[in-house]
Image (tube, rainbow, N blue to C red; front, side, top):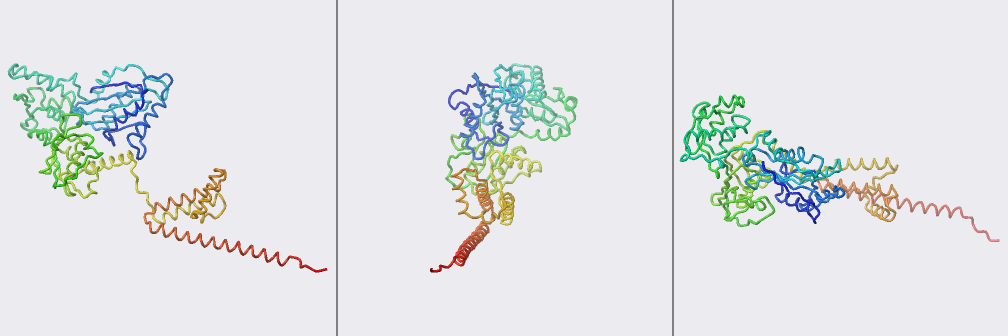
Length: 520
């Protein structure tokens, strides 16, 4: 792993906000983002970044100069393939919080996979929120990184020999020297493997050719020279003695014996394209994180690394990895030229699984598309469900909280009963009487909330209206409101008549009881 750090004072205008907005530019979601400051429903990137700055600044202690760190923890491409976004963030937390600055502080972690080396950006507040102190100590991160590399079996460019920094040559070295060099390189790879199968996968990923000879016997080829695994001290017996029994070893060996696929054949999406000419740049993954010069080769933004290739005439998107962000962008490009219809996926199991997940995360099935070529497992369905729940929690997607008219009437009845219990009056009509509600609002504006009965009647009406708005059957809700309005009208007419009859009765009584005038 490689650590890059910048310390910021946060004293210049929008310093924290600009850093936070930079981290949010890729529209991270789900496991690719973790922040101690929760995002509000419908909050834009700019508003969220401004609020993060406000909270960071509010925790600044007297005479504090440096406010925060902006760091980046980069992983080797082989580690990026096997680590999930959540695992990368957990490792970054272990580096910067648990073993570094301390855990009692605000933070923002974002995973980016738009370069050759997947990396985690970290925005770290320097103030310990419990002790109310600033951590300005210089932290030696290299020992921490080395410790965690060993703990998690991660690659390190500075300590592990690789195909790029070793230079065995058939012309310059004897076969014996080549074998020794090869053996040392494989031992370095073995240090990172947890199982015998994983060892095979790692050496395959390093570009070495594996030949399955028989049963558990195999050979390895490098620079045109082939060696038996037993001659290199890496037979299955030796691997089992070091890493333990692996029931999947033979199956892995057989699968890797096949000719290594070309990069653009890692996986593919195929659909029936048409002459649709309405593609426009939009605020989405494809347009924000990828560039193309010819609408054929799509590269990660600000990088020469090709993510996928698009062949419109054949309706095919070919990928160089199983990266979910690249797959999502490839799907977006494909459906730009597709009418709703079937999409076929092919490639490695990891690729097909991620393509199936991204298809459903984009809700393409609701737009008339279908996907085939992969049979998801129960674990895949569980993973998809978890991702959708996290997406809903992150972006505050509204759940269906609609009511039936019966449910709404029951809840309104409960509100009225509770109001009657507190005020000892019949509140049924006040829950629906708009004119009474307007009068209560006027009184509250004039005299404040000093009159509890006025405020409670106002709240009762508002709560009733909100419940009726949730009724799914709008016709039934309007009918119920009309019935209550008619009832209110009849009740008011009855009350007015009773008042009039009472006044008339009082007048008649006064008239009868008035002493008659007697002339003298």
